[in-house]
Length: 217
Image (cartoon, rainbow, N blue to C red; front, side):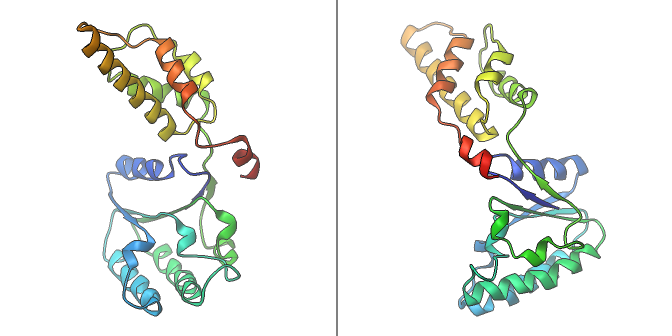
């Protein structure tokens, strides 16, 4: 599976959720995990990693920031071309394995080697965009429910937080929690979080995804 979309839209969280639902081991791999002395050794290191993965069963493997391992040839340095070609050779090995789910995630699908997007490489290529209103509301209920909530208009919060990512909503709720904590210390009495307080925090937070991002993706 290949997931693509703007940063912060929950691609890694989604993958962890799949592993949790399956009850399988979750392994995340990035370019830094392949670091070796000498860039020419990167393809060999990648091949060794696949050898190890193929010994496992019931595992979800995430290659995050996949463009760093599979860059288009016109954008890649010589050593980056080598690891991209090696990835092309190794992917079919995982396709033949049982009980291994490979998920690759990228913010920049246009930077990927086009050969990886041909039929037969990935079973699914899925865009991951901003959450809908129901998902935003569910996240507000989740994070604010951990606090000391008063009367909260969750549909209004979800409407105000259009184009907010899961990370944005978590940051907003963290700011609300901090303000509530400081208010309780200052007033010396119980403080309940209300809609107006959360709306102020939303207005003060700049969303990760801009209108320009959405048009580009």
